[in-house]
Image (cartoon, rainbow, N blue to C red; front, side):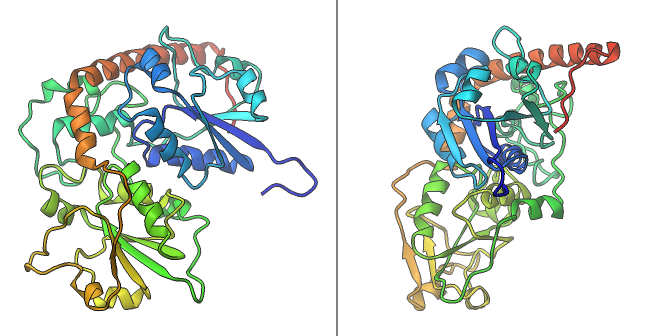
Length: 373
């Protein structure tokens, strides 16, 4: 935090934040640690479509998702695609932060060239193994390799190979590299968390929370209003696959854990929570109320109501988030616009390859600009 004798350092980050995931959240976490107050500019649908192709999520959905990430202090809607000193000065930001990859305009220009040249640019480490490109590819390829390498659906890979989601992907930044979870990463995302205080009303919810989206967000915000401390139980990959089928979950349990931990409404996450809410679980966490949304849920594998215990204890409540977004609807968006997304990602990969080759040449000649984070 800022000391009393100095002005708080204001940090600027901007981007598309399409299908906002833990990679985006990790970049924002790192940026926040470089200063005191984090301002995040989010590009409009029109700007994104012009420079890189149509986004999966609408601008209003993206604004809401980023605003709920716990390291974000302020959101600027419809920020310019090219970062300028004028924009940063308008919001009194000292410098901007971006990952160690390159973002380019439609004509191949570095969107951060101006602020780099003026020494108001810092880099954070990009989170390997996750990108919006990769998430789109998982949905189109219908594979389970992200959580179960023994099974794969029979959809011809050639249909979507342009997405850059296979191991043959060539882009140095958005091609796949397997995400490797660590205890350090979970600890970093848990920073700022506290234990419940005496007298706190503890709320428990559970589910898959796959492809963490605005429907989940509105539900968790509404659930948090039922008490003071919100615990989210995440089901394991095999359990989610049992009740969802196909290649669900799209994100494995480690990825889903980080996405949920980044949400400002969540107090604690139970990794691998049981599908059936038991008396032991409720006693262990001192749960006052178990909350579920309006979506239907199947009986457990023994044919029993998974919420029977909290119902019998009169500690069960159904709430309505007034948001009908679901993981299935996002997948339908991707599939119905498959060709557009394939073309977008192929063009993005080609631009990144050209930029990476130019960067390598600059480094070899000693002309490369380097800014320490």
